[in-house]
Image: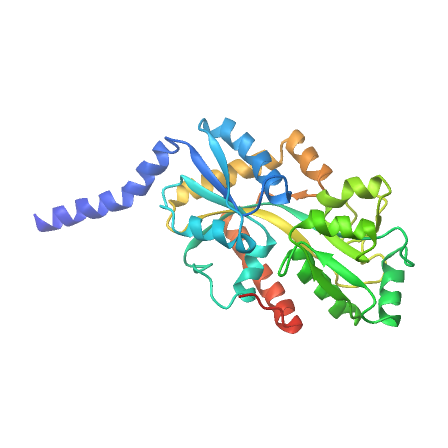
Length: 320
């Protein structure tokens, strides 16, 4: 008799997540974004969430929770119930934060579950039109001949642009001075005004000013040119070997979220980013669609954490 009760209880505990997954979603889903509206993370999240809402038959609500390089939103996710009702869209800073900060309010491996990589957005570097260098090769040559004369702006300490430019410095043996800003818009304004000489961003932020001739785009940190910027060569093409750096957007869930729900969301995202209209929109933003599964995204995050951890340690970048 006791054995029957034990077996029934065990079967119920195993079946419970499957039952919840089959009934899911029964109410609106919240997707946390750790950055303000209008930027790369928010635009990418809303593009996917609009399509996800139609496919799941429930509202999918983007909830912007900016702060601490995305940590505020991820901490909220880590503490959310693992019932498939809360997800988050994170970017490259999420992987960097593991090394940047001495202590995080969550465990990035134990408290979170990878769902899917939405896409990669290779970084683009821009210079002021009055700068004495017109391409990446000339930029590197000038930086070598004039150590400390180039100031580069980023959207903040520990941002993808900050760490990527530190990688560029390491690869080329140059010294450039970092000027952190509170967001990309302020940095771009100072580049236009000549207060800084170099600025990088996800392609989305530089396509328009580049095509309008307001800034000079000197290179793409990718292994091949972007469809949105076919005339801008990669750094690899210009002799800067190994300078491949992207920000990216991907979806996480709280650890313990039922595997069938995680897989369902990953499968839906893979389908969404392959739709012609979504692919065209992403590529117009300079983003390469991905749509990976949970296991592949988990490995990707681990690789990114190791890559940027090395850059952070070598450049001695720390945040409190």
